[in-house]
Amino acid sequence: GRGSLGPLKLSGLSGSVWDGHAQSVSVFDQPLGALDWRLAAAPLLRREVVLQLNFSGGNVTASGQVVRRASSVIELHDARFHAPAKILTPVLDIPSLEPVGEIDGTIVQATLHDGRIDGANGSARWVNSGMSGAIETRFGDLQADFSPAADGSVAGVVRDLGGALAVTGTFQV
Image (cartoon, rainbow, N blue to C red; front, side):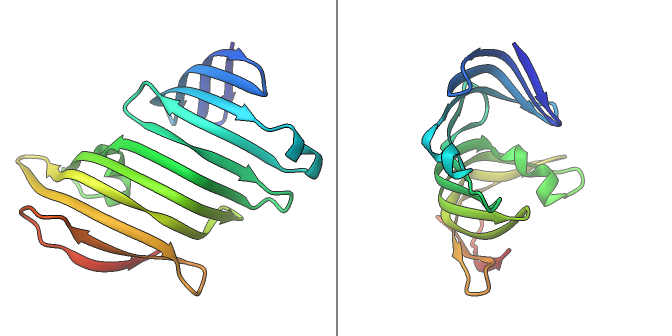
């Protein structure tokens, strides 16, 4: 089977809506690998969707639980992810440079309301961080820890874990 939900494309579908598999998943034509899912039936009676997702087999691996509440709030629980740092290219938006290294992270909990992050708690590590372009440079490992701030935003601390670049700072999203 094959399916498409806007920029999300699934192919090689098998199983059921409750317990299924897609051999190939892509978002905005970027392949993510395979996807396994489990949909819990009982929460549907409360107009809630509870999905356990597991992406594997590609450059990106990720797993976690996604909950859509009856109020349309979306929650992410116990998520883990690994991806090449080059996925940060559009976010960093530095002409002629591409991030190198690997990103590993954990999101203990995150909440989205009306498409906006209302809070998140977790950490991410950029392993063998660096930039590549006309020349390539490596910075070492960088760590970011984040949690909900009092105003509902996400605040965090970023620091180096040794290497060529010394970093200590804070951020708020």
